[in-house]
Length: 231
Image 1 (cartoon, rainbow, N blue to C red):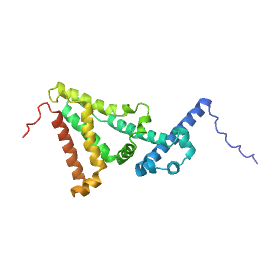
Image 2: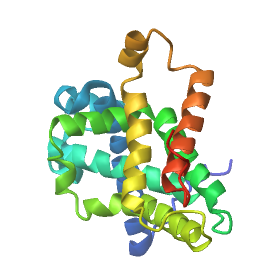
Image 3: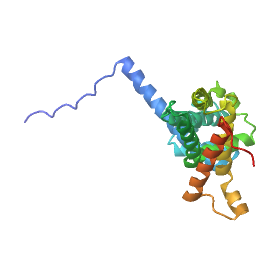
Image 4: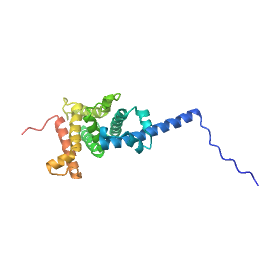
């Protein structure tokens, strides 16, 4: 009778490999906590968000939150940074043709509007932060840089349009960014109260399509080199 085969030994990892595995595990834990925190804070706001619930959703432990983020405030600041990062990643995929500035500006308006509409957590988290007067996002290193890519895209489109005599040269990208953000953000964040006040449903596909077209028309009229005559 042959002796039983010895159990196979797992190959021993080199120190560099072990470090890589640990780093990947740490990154996965951090990302799971961030995902859970985005959902929790979007649902309950900063004040109502519970660290215990975030740990449970992330299949982690409270101590890991404090290890990676310091405290609840640090975690919320990281959440704000993450949602802006996601916005910038999505915007980077936007195809802009500077040879066609009018169509490109329409594309920027469409992107911003539809991003707000499809990512309600973006709206609710920013609402929560504004209730706290921006004290958490102010703690992020380079917080101002989060809006820079969006403003830069608009600046390049405006410059292209002005060079072709299509757009005014005295309109700033910052103002157009604020104009688009104001129209899209306000509509999305107040759609329920506005629906009641106006007596019509604002969260329907036809209403969304109408407002997107209105936003684009407003922006293009604002930047046009020859504004329409005032009646």
